[in-house]
Image (cartoon, rainbow over all chains, first blue to last red; front, top):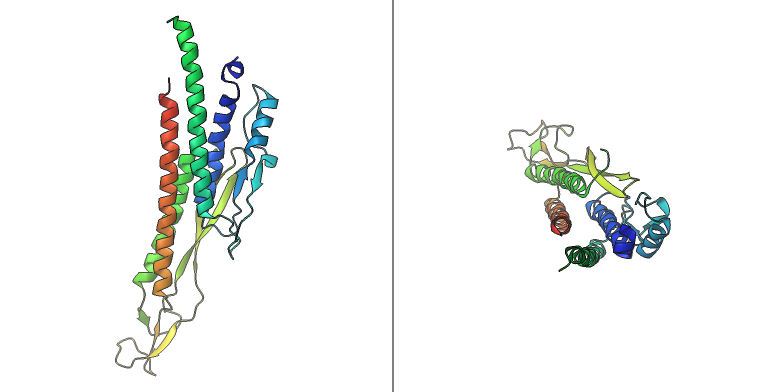
Length: 117
Length: 133
């Protein structure tokens, strides 16, 4: 039911929230030797999530989490580049907001229909 | 720690940076300290960070597992007037690079700020989600 009401936006919102955790992990590990920055292929993850349908546990499996290719890896093996992570985080936050407003719009529509205004 | 959230992630990162900053500050405080023997001289300490991945959520927390002492040799200096000088009139000075320690503190502060900023943004979004009707 909720899948039909919210369409792609419910799943997108969940995935955005999880991606936020992954990027925040990169920011947190900016000084950890040997840490490899990771990110999610959002399109693929969303497709998989939609294909799996409702009732499945929404989480990333190993294949969804990819390693970021560093422009210049540092000597200690860390591949976190703060600039890129900040941009990715900002982009993800903005798109989360977008998904959230779509979901809110849907909820408003349904509420108004129920109230019969 | 089971099932790390964004909050526990930020907390772990902030604690780790705090340990790192304290280590660098201790080094800075001991710059110029001297001792009678080579073994007793202060050697700079560094925090070692370690990451822990939670497979289910993809969140990697960070912790400062240990402090390592640098094996740099203390600087032997001829200073017979010093109360701590040995028979030959030498003292051993702590091998500390003040600029490197200052940069370490600055870098740590930047990363700390970054994490706080990220948490603020995430918290804002969570609140917006909570308040939506």
